[in-house]
Length: 78
Image (tube, rainbow, N blue to C red):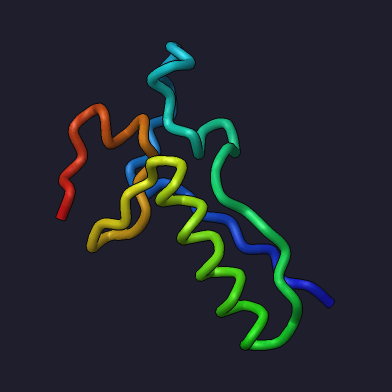
């Protein structure tokens, strides 16, 4: 068995029509991967996804991960 892990933007903003400004989670774009069914595999996958997210411009806030498009619209960087 495998475990699907996907980062979703905490500031998801459905309804924005301009593709360049839409939240990536609205279009199911973002770090995602299948992990094995062990705790070690899940931890390794989450760590890997965190690195990918950072490289792609996602920011981890105290509330969770925020996509680069929502960050551009003024999300807090805390």
